[in-house]
Image (cartoon, rainbow, N blue to C red; front, side):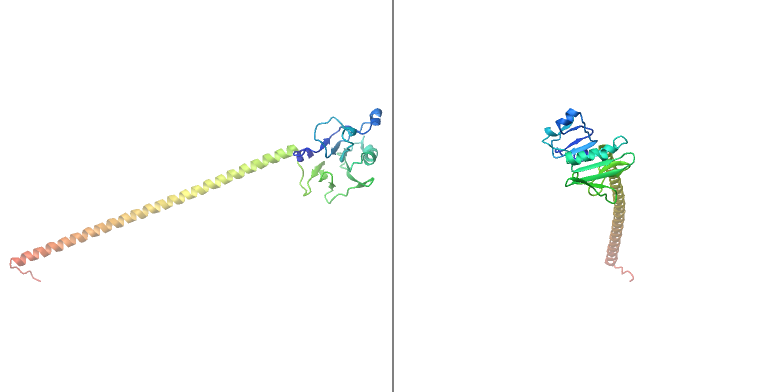
Length: 243
């Protein structure tokens, strides 16, 4: 989880079940010390088969986490705690039991480890990590300062898939809305076209009526003209039509 969260950083080393060599006397006595988890920073991010203090400029871990088990719990709570406090001077030490969910954290203040008080969720703040450590679904997990669970790479991939699917669904819904809007616009255009066609037909009918009226007026004018001409002809012959 931490390597995934810090995937853009190149200034740390995480060891898991790797031996820490801190003295040549330790080598001679074959006293191996391999914390379940430890973090060293700042340092070069590169693979190592073990952490050899004198080859790393005398640098010891900044954070150590031990997973308690029936065979290691006593040493983790006492002997290793003294070693990390007095020899390693590791700023923060945590232990966690996957079986009982016992979870404790300590910060080096002066020469002694002091308890790191839990918050209202039972999480403990790590100054070295800038993260909370706490129990989630019976596992020890990291949480950001705002309380967000730091995902595993698998969880992050699943979240990305879910986000992509949600985005696809939103895009499809938007497409459907756009198509529905287009259909409504097309229907409105068709209604407008039909109205325009009806208006044009009405205009043509009006024009035809006007033309018919004009033709009727012309026929009436022609009939009146013919009547006048006939009257003049009768008068020229000496006939005076009755008024």
